[in-house]
Image (tube, rainbow, N blue to C red; front, top):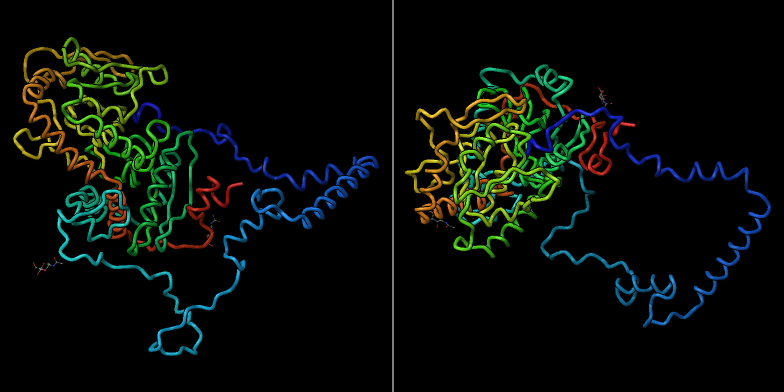
Length: 502
Ligand SMILES: *[C@@H]1O[C@H](CO)[C@@H](O)[C@H](O)[C@H]1NC(C)=O
Ligand SMILES: *[C@@H]1O[C@H](CO)[C@@H](O)[C@H](O)[C@H]1NC(C)=O
């Protein structure tokens, strides 16, 4: 699904909707051009209107507004608001008396220069463990809580830290080189004193960069602890990009940092906000307990991306009673809302251009995902457990086929044919799951408790971003400098442009 619509493309700035600054610059233009034509008749009218206005104002001030109708005049309205401040209107109240034992402080309050550094350290909770209760929607967990609740989530960060300690060096020159590659770099970010600033931003017709930045910002401002200052670049391609914070990587790409997918914030083109989606799936799950779910393998998607993998899956499923996998064209009907995917017990999951964005959404349902070994890695991919002998199995990989048949005839995006064996053993995999409903249900429950309630929760994404900033900082061979001319994220969020942009 990711590759489908959100394949990131550079667009010339001229093709983007221009901002509306022109439309919002009314006064100067209006008054200067009106002057020359302001003739006698208009003056007369203006005088008449002014007189009427003055009269109305006079009447309004002197009218005794009916307190029950209340809205008859602006005065009554103002009165309403005044009432809310208390019967006597607004009045200054002296601050409460200090406790007797508090010493009188005569000296003026000193600015000591550490006012921006008053951060909490630690959660203050005793004996935190994996099983201590926590709220998966809570974005404010401390590092100690994150470590207790999401052990093993940081593998990708550790891997990158190792790479940028022993193989590549994260110097300012290196940063400039990867940030200024002229194409794959979509934003340059400074995190300073737990605030987010932008030094560069590349417009795109999709919202994924904005969503990725919003998620970063959300994770930074919900931190109760001090984060180190860092400067880095972000790439929003469907594949990783050298030295930058990226969405995914092929296993052989080592010089990238994986950040949480922008979908953890929102994917308005398809699914909406992540928090909202979780609320919706919860409702669908309440209405559709396991016994009520449809015992079929569900998939809907486009054949335009990941074509070979998708053809191979559809081919393997074809003709079976449990098959409910169909190709479709986005925008041409047949679309099932993402949260309604929770109504099917089994979900075929082929990949897209690279990774497919739908996985994390499916993992929010109590369902069984049937897929193959992932070809693209995201920040939590290493947590999939496909081991059929494990009581904690949380996903199903179709086993490799070693037989003599050529495989299923597939085509790539260019139409070139080849045979694919990846999904050959899908029928026996499905038969096994359908025969052993308890096992299927256990896998679905594991997915729910392990992923939805823990490792793909909003809390986990905030924890991951903060951990990533800390890990990255340990490799940084330079001190990021805040000049004061950067664009604060808050300003960017309101204007969708940098301070220096016209
Ligand atoms: C934490 O663990 C220690 C040692 O096991 C125990 O003595 C203490 O009561 C625990 N504290 C809380 C708040 O559970
Ligand atoms: C911001 O200020 C620094 C230091 O004065 C300067 O080097 C840099 O070019 C400025 N950046 C912009 C975008 O004006």
